[in-house]
Image (tube, rainbow, N blue to C red; front, side, top):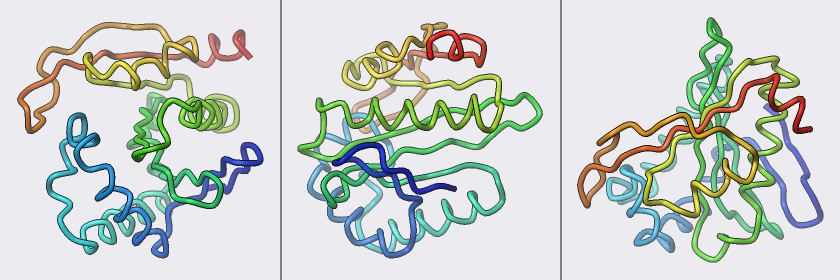
Length: 182
């Protein structure tokens, strides 16, 4: 896992135990917005839930099965980005992300995604990166669109949220395509 300074404002740091308090506070501050799109938000009711999540993320990273980083903007915890379980046999991975209240619409997540995509496709030499977003989550969908991903299809009722089932738009980027875009 790596620590990456993207610019004067934005830094990616692998999640660590000491990040649990700022992450929990950001989830609480952003709860109403995040719970529209993320099924786990309502179940995070105490600091111990975030501590457990980070412990599992660190373990997954140490086993080379994924990667989860905190986004820090001006020294403040702003969100999370990471690789879901890496499929080493097929050389593919999905990216998941979220930003807290006040950090959306400023290009932070697009920049962070670009770094993780570079790492996955150019350094790790994976063949495919996938991003799935609820079809109604326009800001989240704008990120893979902005980065040149191909909309490969829609999975119907792919995820159960508090408001009901949502469809997922599936975006894909192949290593050969990313190299041409870079």
